[in-house]
Amino acid sequence: MEGQGEFSGEQEISSIESEVPDITEQKIISLAQAKPKGISDKDITAEIPGLEPAQKAATINKLLTQGYFDLFKQGGTLLYRLKDPNKTKSVKGADNEEKVVYNIIEEAGNKGIWIRDIRFKSNLMPTQLNKILKSLETKKFIKAVKSVAASKKKVYMLYNLEPDRSVTGGAWYQDQDFEAEFVDVLNQQCFRFLEQRNETTKNCRGGPIAARNIAFASSKEVWKFISDLGISKVKLSIEDLEMILNTLIYDGKVERTLSSDGNNLYRAVEPLLSPPGLISTPCGVCPVRKNCCDIGDITPKKCQYIKEWLE
Image 1 (cartoon, rainbow, N blue to C red):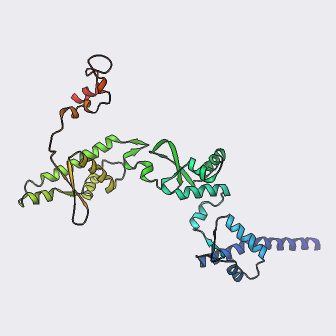
Image 2: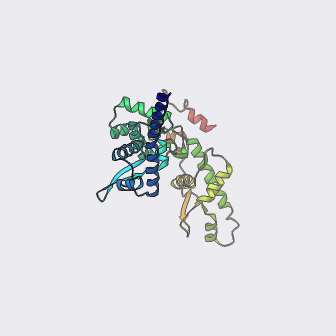
Image 3: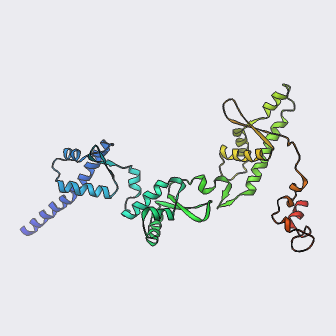
């Protein structure tokens, strides 16, 4: 019984000793939270005077390995600065190689980074890197996004980030395909709104200059008109509508000016010259019109585009 009592006492002491590093870690983390600019070895010693140098070094190394602290020098003194708790939590449980890859992807932001660049920066073998990326994707730390700039390549970014427009193509792309019909519909509706605005100036009694000024509409007004129509499945911004309005300017259908507060104003205008008939037909933009003749596979009689246009 005595032997059993001694054993249980030793077991209790061992259990208490195993808890000491956890308490020490909490004290060091609390000290770092109180001093966000960084803490030194002297600060730790002053906070925990009974801490042995070997135990202090082991605890600090453990916290550094787990990603709680950044290590840097200031005025010849080594300081430990607490990292952002959200970032610390996000990579908790990952090994050192995963943390390296995670940090590289994190630096890329919402524009993402190609696997080739990750391999170059991490100096990891392709097989090993693929395994790490798959692990981080499974844990939902990162995600792979297809880029419109290169259809066969994916970029990696943090899981909770919204991809940049340069990656997704913005509202004009769906699954890497350019939505030409959607852009055409928006183009027509924006021009229709500005034409209707022109109609309201016919009864203006303030003269031609006043009528011209009334015909202008801001991009915000055009955006509200398109939003109220409900023709877009995606949420469009004012900048998106300004891109559409710019295409109308290039077509000579709309003119733009600046208001007194610096905002863009748009007005539908009559083209100086009507477009030639050839441009309005499919032949005007046909890529194989040079091969078109009376005989062969490419002839006006066999052209399905002319049939559709005539109908």
